[in-house]
Length: 386
Image 1 (cartoon, rainbow, N blue to C red):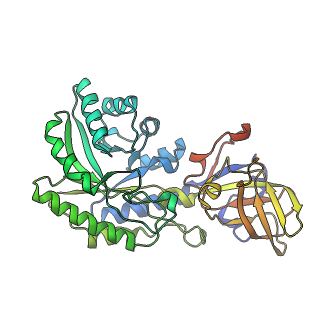
Image 2 (cartoon, rainbow, N blue to C red):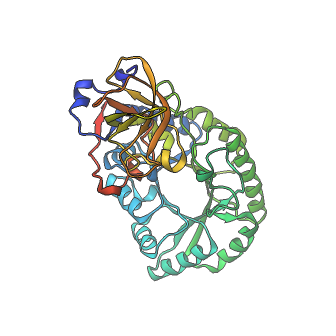
Image 3 (tube, rainbow, N blue to C red):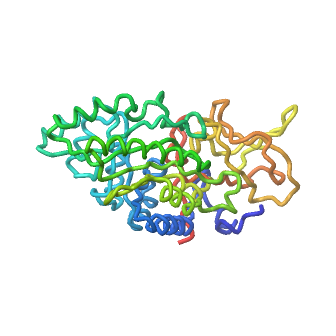
């Protein structure tokens, strides 16, 4: 129970129905301020990736700090609007935009559509024409860069479903003049998620510089360049590294990216803004002795936090209730799936029934990916710190 000082008093936590999410809104505020301060040094614009966490209170706090929103569905667009994000700061990406979602975005007059294929571009032109509108678009280009991250969250390689491949870009650009309800505003990139090796972003800058030079030669230099997100957080030392190194991140782009006169540079950050402010609180149901190991069976499962099951993701876990000697446990949930596990041989202070465990770094892709599988009920989150 080393880090109980990071959370509300144990007496308060004991009264909460578990499993539930704890959100440190003071840490979120500090993170947002640091990110905004570092981005503003270079006049960069940040759109929060709503998919990371669309809890209404979280969205309201981010909107109040002046951020834009990066949405990947009509539902996210509506959630962003409901939380106070201006339509003029909303970008809309996604390889499979349904007609009703496009119609909603056109009706609300969002800032930009990040278009991922020629087929989508032609459909958008047709739907915009029906509303007598002109749709502002950025072409999402697949830069063919393999980011050094988990294979399931790489998005910028040519074999991924995302974006327009480089060898198909000319055909799309040649089609643009014929699309009367399309306004070409920019280019968009996103190479993946949970990237901590800055060399990946250096490679992205070099590729974007090449593409920009190519576009300049065609007299198609974009007004807006959107470089996506992907900046990772430290899942192994969440208490020491509570805020991502935004200074190093933005400075790299300032040094490596060739920025043309009057170009606006955009980023779509998600995990790095909200990941460390969220913690999953769970109660131990049973301690089960196996033949070769012990299991700490908790009331949280893959229904609350699917990342370990889906990505084999690591999350640090601690026992807030015990000061006993450290022992190793497999921490597992109650869902009827073998992959409903949070970690094997996890060192925890001696675990007993009803102990409270915390699973760190769960503010991104935790609550937003939760489900009702096994007819499980989701609990209301608990906010503290502000």
